Image 1 (tube, one colour):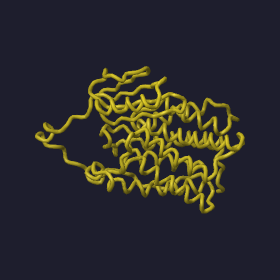
Image 2 (cartoon, rainbow, N blue to C red):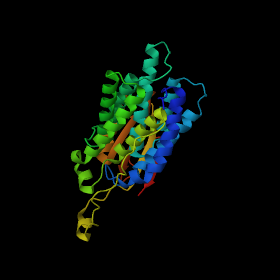
Image 3 (cartoon, rainbow, N blue to C red):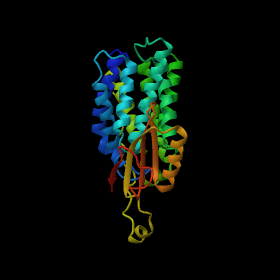
Length: 306
């Protein structure tokens, strides 16, 4: 089967395929979730976020150009971002949208499709934005997997591959990097798992390959390789309890210096802080903490208890 162009209709089809594939892998991804908080919801959060992105692109005109469609994906993901992994996913889609929009501007709006070089550049930009949203990226997480995917796509483009080749190369490199995540992050090694966010990213990359060539690579089922015995009561007594609440809200009218000040304050109060930018002075803020009424509260404040 010949490869399909990555144009507007293909981008729309990818969003639909990505949602379908996340549905079928949600439980698998959730079982891998031990970092940054072991709350078994990474797959669920990525699914809800991608569903919001799909709803936004689905509302665009059928003949919409690719920059508008990519921007709709990013806007939908930011507005519907759920959990730390959803915030990071929104930045991945924003990276795709910004790279496509900038490329179209350089060509006076004439961008009928995304080629291999642009896909590589988009993944590279997405990795930078995802890393920024986390404050200080941790090796062995989704950002590590995404950086490997970007490098492979860029190399494929430089060697003359088309966009389907680049997507496949990105997926294969992501799978290899995913296998290495337990070597980079002790908490993953102790639990016998790969990074859950990286696994979710691999689902999205394989969905792109499936969209372009009609089928996705076969991947193993990722599961804990060394199930942990239940902790002893004495260990439970001294273990730090995870924060009681997961807090998210949308923030507007706040400049970059103030956002970094907010990040510093939230890191003092809780953990798993992620702040995602939309590119139009809107931010999605995420943190796990014990005081759901703590300062930093803003419009769109949403709280989930444990």
